[in-house]
Length: 362
Image (cartoon, rainbow, N blue to C red; front, side, top):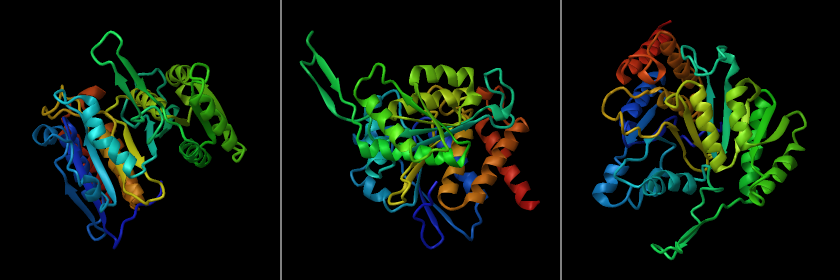
């Protein structure tokens, strides 16, 4: 991942804890980042109370000048967005999606692997059998806010939602995936559905093949997304890098997260690779309102997302230490209920912090 725009040796991080379990897991991630980075290097965190609670009080998910405010930061660290009393299309389109689009965070990177100490739900026990990175297009595709409804409330009501695929948008996400595959095993799968979606998917396929001509050493194949979903479960060891549209990348990365143990483990990096704008890092588990406030949320996804943030901000060694400490804590038995353990959010956090302290003292 490209390094951020950090200046004067200090990385400025905007923290939006958000909704539900967001504040619980984000506090864990911030504590771990503080412990992993030498104070002389400098990490500055500033918290913003935006989200559904803010919406219920102010009628919007974040202030009008929020994007301008966030533009002054190097990175953004987000907990979760969504709450039962706020419609999902309001919460997402009022906060996360405008940030992704305005800051051109066109790469949504979602790595998953079987971490030490975690028993996945699949019969494959070898930790090396699951190491998959989904590269998701993040600013257009099926999640384009284009369309509308007419004849509302009548038997003739019509809803139209348009998918927007641009050559620029597809080319840059596919090229990123080819580059990543080159750095890893040299295997890449493109998620398509050109047998049923007759315009945008053949367009995606054509560009995938065109760019593939520039990477003769990459073993690249296109696979229908439904068949790919099944094979990710049946034969995860066959896959390394998967690239897909906004919708397909979203769905497939939920599968890869689930087969790695639980969606509470998986991180997400919303990247502007050029570093022109800040990038955003988050766990993918959502706000989980059913367990919010109980202190049992899994902080692993937020901590792994913190590791990705540190790497992107130029603190690669610290990012590696964070992920190593998380794996060590999980292997020692610090696991929340979704992973078959009994540890609280705080207990897992303290176990990770203890591992970081031991490593620094070694």
